[in-house]
Each structure stands twice: as structure tokens, then as C-alpha cells.
Length: 457
Image (cartoon, rainbow, N blue to C red; front, top):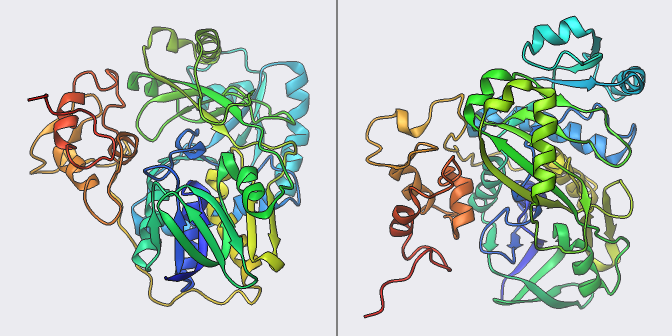
């Protein structure tokens, strides 16, 4: 049986980045994901903001990982065709108390190395955002905050890892295991696997995996639910920058921003719950999000809602990342990676690799670079290119060629969620009402759980 150098448990944003980093250094990598596709847990729902770290705790590991991840994303995005919507952000003060808090936040940003932030007046706010409510008393302008595609980068990272011989095992839940002093033997739902070192990137189950295989965990996952409302694409005409609230100790707060896909998004809420699986929405919270969005950006009152959704963040009893190594067990835990994890993923991966190899040996000289199809609305899409064949999803303009490409290749979509994250099909105004039947036909034979069944003879 093959013994991998590294077994990464979890194919979320961080797991994909970690697998890539180790594969780029020549390690043999095994990724174990209990769901049918990548990004099926906490990582599937996020606000897709590439953060500068301006408000991160000074001197923290979180800040270091965010800034290292931010820099690497900008470095590789052109080579991988990963989109960046250059928006900048404004931290808006709506009250006198919030206005008084902006100065210290600006000081913290500069201490964190973000030197281009500055306080701006209501008049300058209006020049940036003419449709924003006139109630804003002031703002901190953060030019470096941007929007990205929330899913394609992590698929790209896993594709790159696979191109460097990583083995990706989906539907492989880790159910037990033991360490004999040299090798980990892991029991999974698809059979026994072996690796020299285990890296726990299990997200919402990070503490459970530590308890299962180490006998104890140094932290407790306390799932934090975030609900979101997505407005129709017409809303994008009324917003340019990311509108951030003054952050609190507990949360970065409710954000109003465009998405890479041409919509406007408001959220998330921050609701602690015990359930690690279900992220339900409720009408009262959604109505409150819509009210807050309209209060900030009044033209939204005439814009319809495309979709609502909720996700869970793997928060813990403490705010900071819970990354720790147990060298005697050949084990690294990467836990408590909350909402900043999407930005920090590449930085976390570098940090974890340095924990594993203190010599920080350089990566392989020859690196495969996957070129990702574009899903962002501000860049050319497949429908604008000749020969796409058939328009399958008319709301999001997803072509048959895009769907067929997502169902093939080294990491094909293995369920409907994975297909949606690769193409945006059924994510528009009708939420699949008009295209679901056609997608079911096109995906027949590809998914472990099919979208439809053949008629009974």
C-alpha cells in the first residue's frame, strides 16, 4: 500500500491550499474529503473578499497568513486566470461612536503595514458612492480590499496539486486511525490509507478529528452561522466599493458588496449554533438584512432578490487561528480558521509547510499551472466565444460547453453543488427552475447521487 508523505484531511479552502503547497515542494500528498466534492463544507459560503488584514490583530498569526496569502494570490492569479474585481473598501461610520472608532482603526491598519488607508469625509464618500445613504458621517478608505471568485481559486489549487501527483479521495470520511511511531494508518469509508504525517484541515470537524485520532482536542468548534441575501444584477449599477461596518471584537459585521458574478450581496449574520451540518435561513433575519441593505443603499428598494443562503464558519472559543504541530505524533492541526480563511489560505499553507520543514526548501523548479475558465461577470465569459453550442442556464448564461468541461478533466464535478460552483448554473434569478431538467440530462451518469432517475419500466 502506498504511504503518502502527507495526508490532508479536508478539501475546503485551506485543505486545497495546503495540498498544493506540499505538492509544489515534491511531497507525495493524499487528500481525504468526506463529501463528494471539494468546498462542500464551511468554504462553500463566504463573502469572497480578499482582505488586506487592516483590522486583524497586530502581530497575530492571522494577520501574517492573510498578508502572505493576499500577496501570493496577486502573484499567481494572472498565471491561473483567477479574477480580481478591484473595488477597494470603505469602513463606514453611521454613528458618532463609530466615527470616533475610525481613527484607532486607521492607526491599527498602518501598524499592520497597510499604509494607503485614509479617513475620508461625507463628501468624499459621496464621490465614491453617489447612491449610498447620506447618513454616513465619515469612513476609512481601504483601497487594497477586493472581490474574487469564491470557488475557482481553490479548485485551481487542487488541480495544481493533482498535476503534481497528489491523490484526491472524495467521499472518504476518516473514521479512525492509529500511529505506530513512524506511519499513520487511517481508516476511511473507502478503505485503509497510510501516510507519514497528517494535517487536519477538517474545518467544522477539526476538533472532532483531533479527538478521534489524537484522543483530545485543544479547542472546541462552535459553528457560527452567517445568512446572506443576494440582490439581482441590476443592483451592481449602484455600488462600486465594498461597504464595511466598524468591526467588533466578535465579528467583522454585515458587509454590502458586489460579487464577481455581477450581483450585490449583503451579510453575513453571526449566529452561534451547535448544529455543524444544517445552515438554515429564516425570514426575520433575511428581512433584517434587506432592511439594512436598503438603509445603506436606498436604490436597492426597487431591486429584486436573486437568492438567499447561509453558511457555517468554524469559529472556536477563542478568536485566533488554532494551528499547532505535534511533532512526536507527526501531526499538524489547522483549526479555527474562520471568515478570513479564504484570504489567508495560501499564507496558512506556507506557514504549515514551514512548520513541517524548518529548512523551507524551495519548491520544485518546474510547476504545472492550471488555467481556469472565467466565471466573473466583468471579464469575457464562454457565451461570448464562438461555438459554445447551447445556452443551458439563461439566467447566468452558462453554456453546454462549460457544463461538459466541468464534468470532465482531472477533477470533474461530482455533485450538483460542485457543478454549480464550477459553472454558476442554476444560481440565477430562477434558481434552476428553467434549466434543472436539462442539467439533469447532461449530468446523467456523472454524479454519485443523480439529479433524476430513469422512469420505471
